[in-house]
Image 1 (cartoon, rainbow, N blue to C red):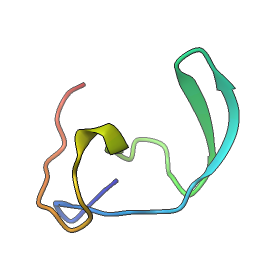
Image 2 (cartoon, one colour; image 1 turned 60 degrees about the vertical axis):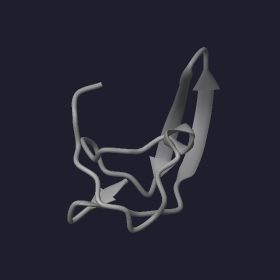
Image 3 (cartoon, helix red, strand yellow; image 1 turned 120 degrees about the horizontal axis):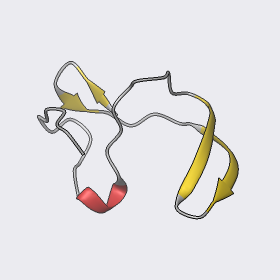
Length: 52
């Protein structure tokens, strides 16, 4: 996720999983941006949100 222009790690809870989707049950508010692990971004790196 992104906090103050920097990548940050946060523990989240996962619920139901489907074809290409996973339900987040806790730790993330609606509309917050997330960074997939595959992006190779480390916690603390400067980042900016963009369109997917």
